[in-house]
Amino acid sequence: MLLHQALDRCRTLVVEGRDGVGRARPLAELARHGYAVRRPPAGPHHLDPTRPYRELLAGEGRLALDGGIVHELVYGPLRRGRCRVTWIQALDFAESVAERDGALLHLTTPGQPSGPAEEFAAADAYERALRTLAQHVPVVSVDAAQFTRQARAPARTRRELGLHDQQLTVRWNQTA
Image 1 (tube, rainbow, N blue to C red):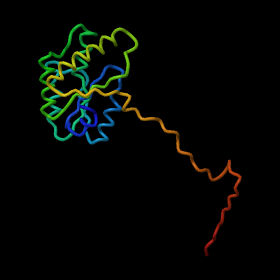
Image 2: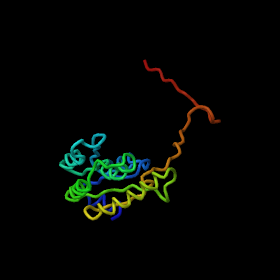
Image 3: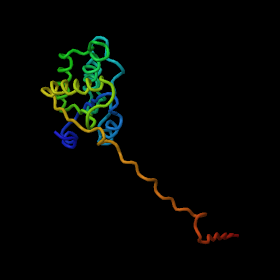
Image 4: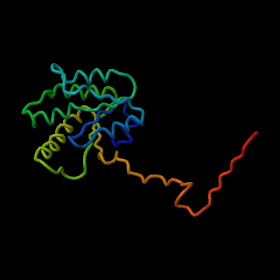
C-alpha cells in the first residue's frame, strides 16, 4: 500500500520512525488531510504500556497517532537492555489498529543510517519489528523527506518609494 492509498483507505494511521526521522511534519500533513492528531503521554503506562493507545483508538473519526510502541520495541533493548512492551501487547495493539481500518506509517530515511552503531541496530530492529507486525496490520513505509516542503523564495514586494525612478504624486483633496 502506498501513502495516497493509505490516506484514502485508512481511518487510523500510527506514525512510527527511528529517532531523528522527525514525525512532526508528517503528523501536521495528516492533520491537513482531516486526521485528528493525538499524542499519548510521554513514557509507557507502568502496568499496561498499550493502554493510552487503546483509549485513543476508542475515539471516533479519522485518527493519526504519534507512535511509540514500535519505538519501545526497538530502543528499549538497545538502551535499557529490556523492553517495557511485550510482543503480546504489541501484537494486540497492531490488531486494534487494524480493526479500526488502520495502518502503521513507517517513516524511513533514504540510504543507510550514518552515525553511531545504535542507529544501524535501530534500523535493523525496526525492519524486523515491522515485518512481524505486518502480519497483523498493514505497514506503509514512506520516505520522511516526502513530507518536507521546499522552501519558497519570498514574494517580491512592490515598493512604492525608493529604488524606482518613477515620480510619485500625492493629491490632497480638502472637502468643506
